[in-house]
Length: 109
Image (tube, rainbow, N blue to C red; front, side, top):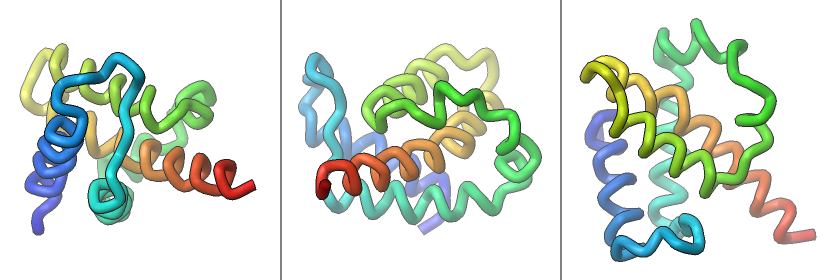
């Protein structure tokens, strides 16, 4: 599956899972988590990510997966160009993937 298809599948899968109810935050079903991790691996190989990964603010590195996902959606929706909209998930999905992994470890403890 190509990266853009994966991104669309993630957004559609989360929307279907939540059925539009984002009031209590975002939860990710296991199959979407796996897709996020796969997409994040592909994102980490893009030049955009490679060239900007060191510019990530600390607050984003420590945010919850739910908050990061919602920030990603807002940034996509408010992007001034299609290029910004396409680039946003490439920068955010690795952060979301890392947050999911961090939260799973915290939940196990």
